[in-house]
Amino acid sequence: MMKKLIAGNWKMNGSLAANDKLLKDILAGLSQASCQVAVGVPAVYLAQCQALLASTEIDLASQDISAHEGGAYTGEISGAMLKEFGVRFAIVGHSERRQYHGETDEVVAVKAQRALGCGITPIVCVGETLTEREAGQTGEVVKRQLAAVIHTNGHCISEVVVAYEPVWAIGTGKTATPEMAQQVHAVLRAQLKAASEHADRIKLLYGGSMNAANAASLLAQPDIDGGLIGGAALKAQDFLTIIAAAA
Ligand code: PGA
Image (cartoon, rainbow, N blue to C red; front, top):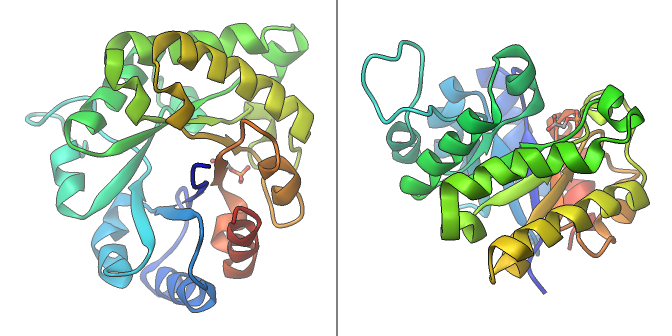
């Protein structure tokens, strides 16, 4: 069986002092993680976290990556730059970036391509809004979002991680039930299988109010291979409990 992946998404939270404490507390409680663990930190803290995580089992993730390789793109951070700081995963197409920064399916697909081109594994986020779910469009929406990434990345699609994050569940305390999440994961798995003979090794994460109490039942679903954790990743004990549930 493939190892599960538990990835924290700190979003725009943290400080030098808070990051130091959080990572030290997590490392102190981590007993030979039998799943893969990563933390997605704000870009300005990559150097600090790289130093704190050097020769540990925790990988570093960025929360975004530029769709451009380099040049006159003020404020952007390229894959090559992220790579210099030991970044192993890049979250791409998070719903907050789609919503507040106008990222389209096409931009997200190119960002995934840039990551792969630098040897960084993109964690591609897909997910429907509440309105879309209520209109019965969940399957259609996530398939459209994933199709763009498949189209742009061809056979490299087997190298990505996909995170299903229903927008209505993010930061709201409303979690998809394990059955609801599994249903969408099965749709995504089928789509990936049609695109790649190696689809079985693609990790499908669930994200959206995953926490210490509900992680085990979500992670027990056949097509849920890990979690992308926001709020609960900022509390060492909660993050550790989720990691333990993924063993
Ligand atoms: P949440 O965030 O766990 O706080 O709902 C998940 C995410 O946005 O990745």
